[in-house]
Length: 271
Length: 251
Image (cartoon, rainbow over all chains, first blue to last red; front, side, top):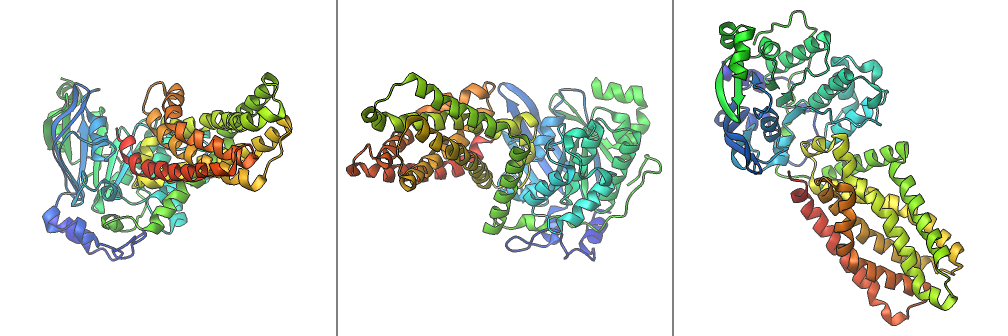
């Protein structure tokens, strides 16, 4: 199945018409999805300490193309730290990290092109309009045909009519939706989301689920961290449970969902 | 892939255009320039809308000049030797307010992480922040120098003073921009910048005060090497800032 997905992605008719500036020599998608690197994300033995406290203690994570993975765990389990490390925003003390075949520890700048992140914070500038925010981030990622792309992602999150509003004038939920637009603006290979449902109403959560589902269907990898097992398992293939910086469960999300009705799932996650 | 989300509206999307250019071996000059432009344009637009830094810098620098004007009864012969110092105290104190906000404002707004997870060359970030600071400091100087000339009744060789101010401002801006990133990672970031800045700034301050004295005619032409020394420090501070930024911003 994995090879089929890779094949579908690699045979995409628009593959060569990248939305991004071919900065220097252009390397085809084949490099990222070569047979040697079947996983979009491969992390081995990640360790991250803050002073004496270890937030991550040898975490292994692997995400295949088209896979939607839920990262579950109670508060303080290390979910946010793991997301930040995988996003190359935080350097691990030990372990290896490969994104799209790129050694992200040695070449973080190259790996960053492949990753989109929705974090606790929206990364939006309050005194810029939504369009100006997206234009700024689009320029950082080297997105070409930027205005068209901005229209597309704003439309996708239902904010086209608010594109000229200052970010600070919008509700938390709307800012979060714009943050999702920002994270998908450069059409990343891998999408990392840290409790993205924060502030979103039911309709917006469904829209988000649709966006993630759509991206996964197109061969992208998704990792969604949350402490709300019921919400994320609804659209995940696999669930990873993190506790005290260690992966305690890594398995099929559906099986996890079946075997664990909400109270049992909560017990599994929270201990 | 399955969905338990019901009839979520999934909009038609183009096939993936996953960023193949990400796997290029390095950043081209044009991409570097575009990133500098993006950050600089964003910072200047934000400052234009809020005027948070500029207003504080201007008011503080002018207050220092006015205070010195009242506090010191400078005779013309004393003024020639003390004047450059007075001018630069005003410029440095005023500028420090703006420099301190360079990265603190990103940290406080929660946008610094957004910059750090983007494929933004750290040297480009340094260059953009430096240019933004230089623009604000230039405005402060454009206001302060005439105010200084009027308040202290000093005749100024405009060209010489502009060259000296430019050289001094680059040094001050480079050190301040780098140390602003250092201070932004500390809890007492507002008070940390001056503590870190002033000791490192001493060589620049000595050079720029002497060079300004030369421009004002209070120092003889044989002291010309001060400007060369100043330019050398500028080059060193800019180079160190561009290289060190990556390590300074690392968590």
